[in-house]
Picture: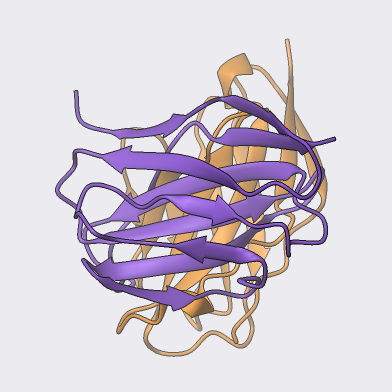
Length: 114
Length: 112
């Protein structure tokens, strides 16, 4: 089955630690995205990548970093510089970034920083 | 950036049609109208999208106003599994993912 996987589903970390969230897709999509969702809120774009070895900042990139070394993988690192990292993180992919392409979302990772 | 406005919540009864409105008065000529829905603690799911003409698929119908300043997502027979938050989103046809904006959406409650 084609799709997007995110791991782990739940993640707990101590304050001050960096943590990396995994996102893998086997849909052969060029574009991948990371979003953050806080309780009762919509999604906010953190980073996106249109092609391997290239990525762009979204609306709330501060305190986060990404890499895109392989087409199928787009890991997100939440650094200690992120002031309020506890949130629900969603990874998505699409064939392209143009407007006629739907995005496919993973199941999400719920990060709690203690 | 073109924004959308949706009601915070709506309620429907099972097996009745549901019309979810969305206003996008500042839409540009190259913006596609997308709808996604999100069940609790899950990732959003694509529902439908369109540019100018009305669209139908197995999940829903999308009715787009002639001036494109508003649209309506139509669920023909609501089921309990349709209870979710529905997001109306504009996407530029020529790319620029930084323009993608998820608002708070409409929380749909379906009563048995």
